[in-house]
Length: 260
Image (cartoon, rainbow, N blue to C red):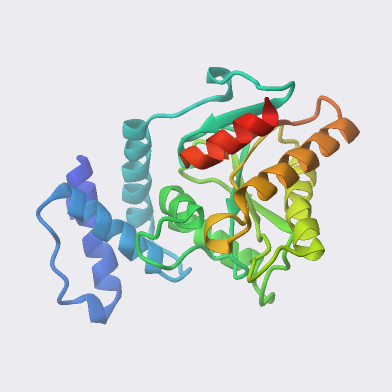
């Protein structure tokens, strides 16, 4: 097969490759519109199990994702201004941030979101990192049924602009927030910081862990996040710069108020 050189050719190649993997996909047609092609490609990558892919696929996928990153743009810490010493607040897409590490709000299976084109951060991170990330997560989780709440694991970032991804499972709120929920959320931040420091990272970007799909109240989650990070930084001075990454306007307002 001729090597794909344009983004549309790469999308066509990758979609055909993924469709040919599964017999049940044989009747799925490749869309004509590039936007629809991108959506189908993301869906196929989202539902793909953590199995090896050949070098031809990975070469095309990596070129496609790197071009997508160039289209979306990269933000570096040098582009940001601290709101407090060693602390930044940034509203944007964490998959375009070139920090040493970014934090993924993972589920307990630690394999990424399998829901096609879902809006969660877990889905976005796995989508733009590439299929290699799910494979590495599966290798790390081999022999382990689930990741305990409040712990953290670290992987390569593959096609993301950061160096590493830290995966942590936050508490899920079913009613009122308990003391255990508060402690577990703080543990998420502390575990990520300790793990990042152990790997020599100097900057980490945190998403809003456990809010959204996990229903932790946004303001309380932000209060716990800031308090835990500041305590850790006092215990480990000049060791880690922290970026609080928010996506929604409401979270940006909350963090601005709390960090003012």
